Length: 108
Image (cartoon, rainbow, N blue to C red; front, side, top):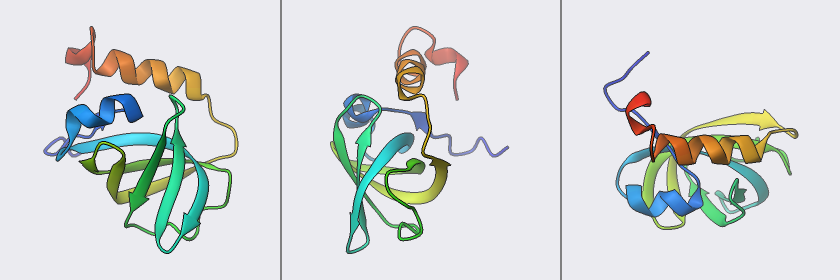
């Protein structure tokens, strides 16, 4: 496991605290147009993702995106992993809050 450039677990609310840093987020894909993916974060907010191979992801699948937060509501993707149609967004959202709060020291 490469720990030289860790990706922080985030949801849309936490993304703005990590602009310019490597993050990981799970989105439910709502549409893909012109190489840009629009998706809903686990906390219900809409985000845009640019880069990586986005065309192969079917709607409305969940996708984990690892990349650089380049704005309050956008990410430049390095890696996209299809998680399928079923995903526990509530639990992931809770994990994001723990990873950026009280238990931050337990996460890379």
